[in-house]
Amino acid sequence: EQIVFDQLDYNESAIWSLLLASGYLKVEEHTFDADTGKEEYVLRLTNKEVRLMFRNMIEGWFK
Image (cartoon, rainbow, N blue to C red):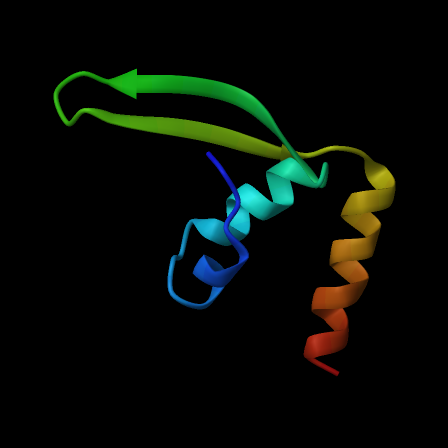
């Protein structure tokens, strides 16, 4: 999926595309549901450093 920065304000999935394309997330698993016609992705943080960065950022929101 292409990243369109102006979509970040109104498209809920745009942030996931941005994080994926910038290397913070990677696709762990991909499936297609033929009944609904929808794709489903399992995403994972790429490494411990990224995990620590997000943990510290989110904890900072609640301090």
